[in-house]
Length: 256
Image 1 (cartoon, rainbow, N blue to C red):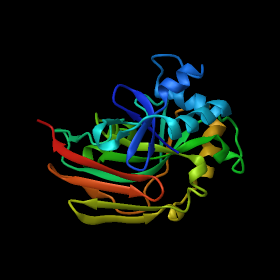
Image 2 (cartoon, rainbow, N blue to C red):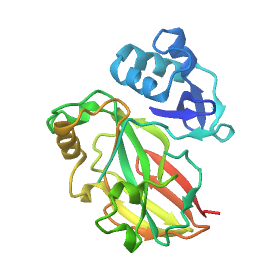
Image 3 (tube, rainbow, N blue to C red):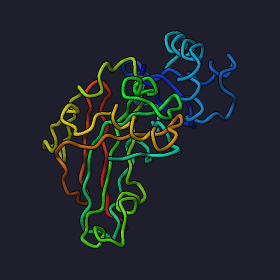
């Protein structure tokens, strides 16, 4: 199931080209409280089978709206952590005045659903709620590569993480290491990669990270880009897709 975050911070399911609301049904069934957050919705859906059953029933029976008529938000606006080897879908990436060299990576991102601590590789994917697309933007100017700067600063400018367009639940993707990634920059191919080419698998990422910290519901683990990093310029248009997840477009604008 494709779980989306839309309009006034509502949770929904995307089926074909329509969005089916899930929040009210989950509230009436006692799984969520009014004013819920997406972190709470993910934790409930990942850990309470009855809640997921309720959501699937609601997705098939509730009224729906064309996806073009709603405003999609980033699936998670306030993740507890982003582990990298959120801006809303469609929102522009702003190139900061201080930087003359910003590049992009389009990456597979796992969303943790069940708390993970000291998890082995065989059980690692059991803790994943689903998968989404993460745009990882980085400042690459020489001054940002020295000892007095950090990876967090290079990747930490406002708008430098794009997330979306929704979360595809884990049951719909048999193997996260068997997905094609494609990106167009201004209509021209910029990346044609495959998650099977990654140095470390998602299972290895989860095993390592859960060995040093507790991975809670909503934590994002992004898996890097095998190839295709390119420099950005004002006015650029990016279109990225990951097999079995979907497609996401990003506009690039210079800081004014």
